[in-house]
Image (cartoon, rainbow, N blue to C red):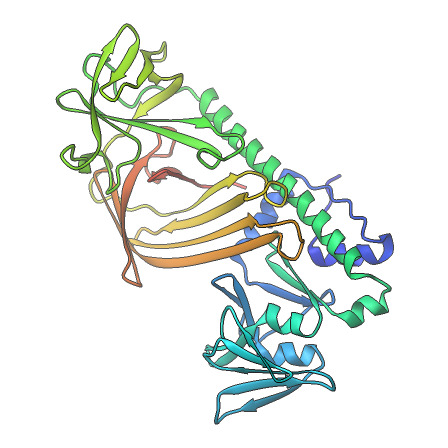
Length: 423
């Protein structure tokens, strides 16, 4: 029988009874459910009890900001607001913390401390940096990326439950390591399942292949199991141009129609005796397989077809990748990007990444997220995303051969394969 995924908060509760020994057994389906929580609001728990806020907490440049009054009062601090100087102060018998709106310097018991992010006003409420406030009171602060939750453990809580700082830190470390392993396993299984489904599905090339008359862009994928080359799956792309010219990889400014060999790095090529020979000295195995597909260096490739004029897509997509094993391997990272393309020509996208930084559990994991919205247009094989903030991105766009053509569920934008996740 499958067990429900445990949150960091629940694991800390278990640590009270079992001296920080945590056993976590999760299934792939449960991990899928927890991964979806990255799109929800950030939760904050104090001593395993979740706090409520008038304005949801937010992450800005890696710093979690929360409404000051609820936080200070939860920490048993007296709250004062100085309207004239835009300054908030929290204090108890032994500690006084003051922050001024917009300033990156806080005052702790008369000593100036530099902040990563200043206190700021959001939706009419003052938000302050959670980790700084909590650690200034001697509390421990941990980030649970799998449940999108920050947990603050006070010294009083440790003492009341006869826990040491080391026990809690070890419990958190074990929890993050186990969840990281399961996440890694899930991603590899999903990648394998995707490949198996594509291989099992009867396919024909999008257009006939003639090795003597190669024309246009061809794409195919190969697995990158540790993620260090391409983030889990490598997409090989070759664009054959007039005059026996070839362009390798993803064009910088859009689809294959944007390639200009006067400015882009193209090579001359010849095909002889099963070899694709480039003018830079590189050589690749090349053939047409029994299914009729072009194959280069053992990778089956299909043609990139132009997208029909005026296409509007209405679907939610996800792109996931990784490098190394987050929480285990040094300098490792995993990321998930969500993209919604609406039929009215608008889009929303958000991204979440998790990175290993060091050995200490308090600094072991760093997170970041980003959000953007705007409008999009697709012409030939170029997608243009115009964000509400004025950013413009032009990139390669095509629909995968295996996708639903009337409303595609498997698309490529640049080197990213976005697909609909049917959980």
